[in-house]
Amino acid sequence: MTTLNALIFDVDGTLADTEMVHMASFNQAFAEEGLDWNWDVPLYTELLNISGGKERIRHYWMQQHPDMKDIDGGGLQDTIERLHAIKTAAYESAVQQGLVQLRPGVLALIETAHAQGLRLAIATTTSPVNIAVLLRGAIGPHWKDLFAVIEDASTAPKKKPNPQVYLQTLARLGLPANQCLAFEDSSNGLQAAKSAGLATIITPTGFTAHQDFSGAAQVLTDLGAVDVAQLRTWHGQQH
Ligand code: XBP
Ligand code: MG
Image (spheres, protein in one colour):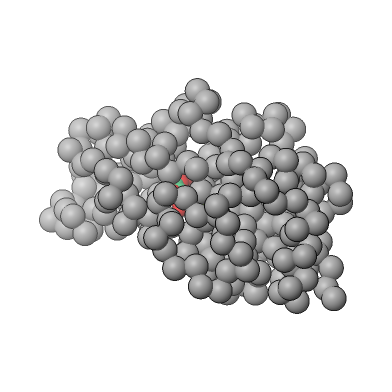
């Protein structure tokens, strides 16, 4: 039987239910730039099919306002970069104000798994700023000591369901996929992890509960009742 040696965590929706705050941050950026764009929950739920905030803005812009070339002659990508920078600052501020908490069981599982010698990694399409502000607040200033590998939007530009972020995480861990478990909240994330050969535990959120999770090793409400022994059992059933 193959040993379980590493846990690989998605961030948004998995470590914390962050997307309401991301949505509000996007809307704050649009307002600051004088755009009358407003992403409500039904629209944002659809837009979450596009991983990556910059890609999401571009998709919405092309779909809803194809005639609009840019805002100030700086070109489309320049405008998207600026909107995303404003959004990221707004999100960072919101998380610093305590508007986002880790999901049930996440902190205990991470700390226990690390204490038992499992290697931990992060594989996300979100921006590095967002990871740092969330985990610094939840774990403390030395949060990075818990993670052997962090792959994010700055290191893996091809977004989920592309498996790039997971393939790069496995390469840096120096482990085969069958010695690891992935944790995700979305169908895009599940597809990316499975394309990289990873057995995947799904904990959906309100934004993703309707999505297709065929092929997941487990679909759970949350990680509140999950310990390392249970993970080893589920991992053993996969390999
Ligand atoms: C979810 C995403 C991200 C966030 C917004 O990432 O797709 O785009 O919605 O963050 P994860 P950015 O892989 O952690 O579920 O604006 O920084 O992209
Ligand atoms: Mg996610």
